[in-house]
Length: 605
Image (cartoon, rainbow, N blue to C red; front, top):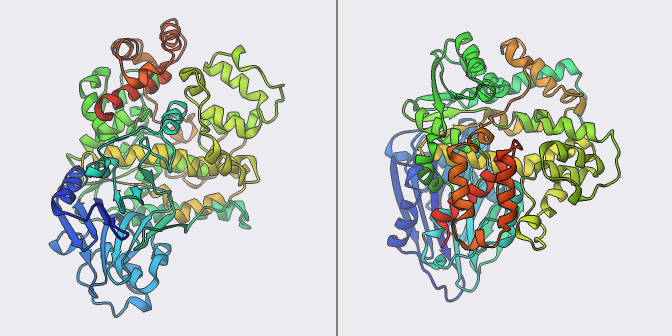
C-alpha cells in the first residue's frame, strides 16, 4: 500500500518539466500514506514519486518507483494484487528475471507481455501509473470497484498531466495555485453529501473512474478505456442450494486471499452481518486469534458493541473497543485535513478514530464493505420496492417539507429513477442556493437505466456511484490517514460478479434483506446478528446536533462569512436548526452543511 504521484510534460513547448524539488513536495503531501520509504524517478519529461507502506516483501527490493529488468517500464503502484504469485506462473512470465518478491513487479511484467490489458489479469485493489520509456506513454489504471483512488489534472495549453492518490498531491504542484470550485460539484455535494466521479470539488482536477485505464500519449492525447463492468445478466442457472454454497465458497476464498501479509493484520468488527462474516472466515483460516476492533456510542440505539462481542467471544478474538463521544470537535480540524473534498458521511468520524486505534496494533485491517451493494442490504431497497406497488399522483414539492416521513410519502408519486435520486438526497441545492442548479443526475440516471430489473437498477447504480464515491473514499482516506491498509474481501470482483448474476428474489423479499448471504453464513454467524434488523454504521448525529455540536454548527453556519455560505439561503438554514430543536431530525442535513464549512476553512482559497 502506498501513495503515488507525479507528472508528465507533453507537446512541443511544455511549461513544466519534471523537477525533483517539486516532485518531492507533491510526494511529501501524501507522506501519511507510506511512512516506510519514499522514492523519485525522472526520465526526461516524466516524473514519478511514491511513499511506501511496506506489506509484502519488506526488503528494499520492494521500494518504488520500480523499474523493470528490461529498463522499459517504471511504475508507482498503490494497492495489493492477491493473485500475483499465481500470475508469475503464467507461461509468458516464467522466464522473467524477477528481482523482488512483490506484486508491483508482477504488474510490470504483465504490462510488457500484454500492454494495457495487463489490468484484466489482476485480482485485488490498485491504482498505478506506469511510464513506458520506449513508447513514451504513461498508463494509469484503477481497480474494478474503485477501492484505490487516482486523481489527475490535464492541461493541454501548458502541456501538463498531473496525477496523485489524493488531491493534495496534485494541488501541491505550482500550476494549480489558482483554485476554482466546480459549481456543479458543489451542488452535487449538497445533494448527496459527496462529490460524484469523475468530477472533484475543483474544476481543474478529475477522478479516474473505477474499472478504467488512462493512456497519455506524447502529444497529450488521452485514451480513457473501460476494461471492466459488472453484468447482471444473464442470471445463474445454478439451483438455490448450489448458489448458496458458491456464495459461501467465494466469501471464504476472498477472505483467505486477503490474509496475505508480511505484517500484522486484524479486522474492523461492527457487529453486523458483513464484518461478522469476514471475521468468522478469518478465524477459520488463521492459526492464531484474530485481532478485532470495534467502536461504540453512549446512545444505546446506535451502539452495536454487544453484537460485536458475540462474534469476538465465539471466535476467541483479541478484541478491543473504543467509545466515541461528541468531544471529537477538538479533533475536527485535524480530521478535515484528511479529506480533500467536502464529505458528509457521518460514519467517517468513527472510521477515522477506529483506524487510528487499530494502527497501534496492526498494519492491515479487513472490513465488511460491499455486502450491502451486492446482496441488497439497505433499507432503502425495501422502501423502493414497496413504493413500486403504490401509485399516487405526483405531489407538489412545496407541499412537503423534507422530513423522513414526508419524503417516504413523496416517493410514492415518483417513477423509479426519480425515486432513486430522492432517497439518496440530503438537501435540495435548488432551494438552498435559490438558483436553478446545474444537472447532477445524468450519471446516476445513465447507470440506473442500464439494468432491466428494478432491484438490479438500484444495486448497479449504487455500485457505480455511492460505493466508490462515498463508502470507499471514506475507507481509503480514514485508514491511510493513519498509514493503515484496509482490505475489503466482500468487494472481490469475482464475488461481486457472482452476486450480480443471482435472481433479485434470492436477495430481497419484502422486508427480508441479504437472504442468500444469510443462508450461506448461517452456521458461522450468531443467530442474534442474522435476525436483527440492519443498523449500519449509524452515528448519533441527530442527538449530538442538539448539544455542543449543534451550538458549534449554528455559530459556523449562521454567523460566519464566506463565499460559499453567503451564496446560501440563511433563512432556510435557520429553519432547519429551529425545526431540529423542536424534534424534527435534520441533524444529517445540518452536518452536511457543517462539513462543507469545515472543509472550506481548511482548503478553500
